[in-house]
Length: 171
Image (cartoon, rainbow, N blue to C red):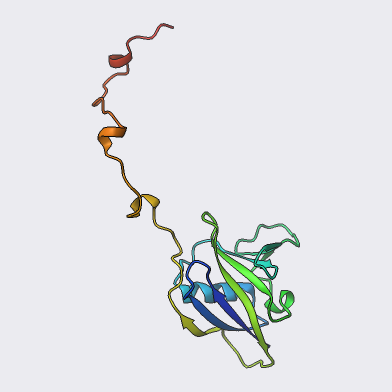
């Protein structure tokens, strides 16, 4: 079977991708396809999480890094096959690509086709630019007002010795 996934983002409403992938392939293959279509850095951590219909995480995670333990709640995305965990169109996942800022893409299984002739996953539709994988530093933003250094910090010059200002300390 061929799975058709719709990838979207709550950050960028114009971003949309449709990915066709064989149901015999792994979550790791879907991960690589998403990484490629979004031009993400492949060295960064990522995970898929099963969700309910309201996009709230369930306990099952498909992680890029294998923890080395056998747990029904965390499965390696390299070994987990799509057809073992996704059966019905409408099932939803989130693809976490930025753990530090809790940023993710919405992934929905839109359709399953009864064909078996797909060798490699491909992006059938692209619209808009993907969200940036890394957020810029907050201080580089034009919206951040930087205070004058005269008001917030008084320089005492270079200190050769702590005792120059505070004197000798009694032991």
